View 1 (cartoon, rainbow, N blue to C red):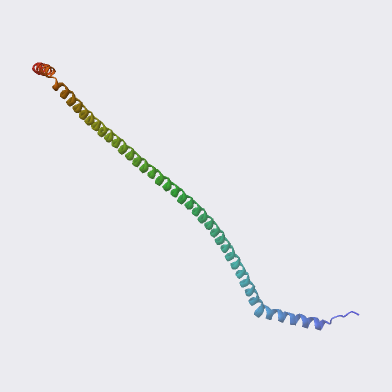
View 2 (view 1 turned 60 degrees about the vertical axis):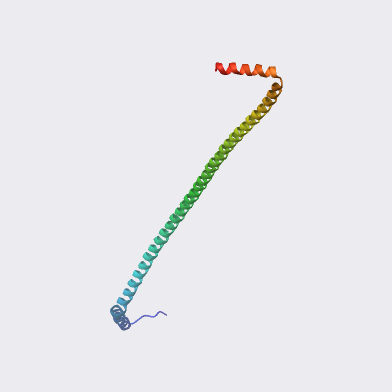
Length: 163
């Protein structure tokens, strides 16, 4: 039981198919092709935008890494400068302390010299006072003896005439 189509059915089916093909080609095929073309362009545009966005993200990551590296370098530089300033401040403070210590030592030396000289002057004054006191006592003892006194005066006179 096979079905065999009639020649009239085949002609009419072919004719209707041709008309349908013409109508679809005329009214539907071009808009469908245009829609597909628009869709293809839209996809290509989206892909190129995605590629551009990916490049931007990559560039931003590179910039971010560069910024991070620059920040690290700057941080290291700031730390280095801080250490240098600390060292300079310490060195300056040491120099000032050394200068101040030298001044104090020099003042102490001068004070010791002044006090030693004052002590020497005081000692000389005391020695002079004691000498005068001793001489006074000796002269007083010698003045009591008249013969000795006259002899002393004569000796002194001879010394004065010679000078």
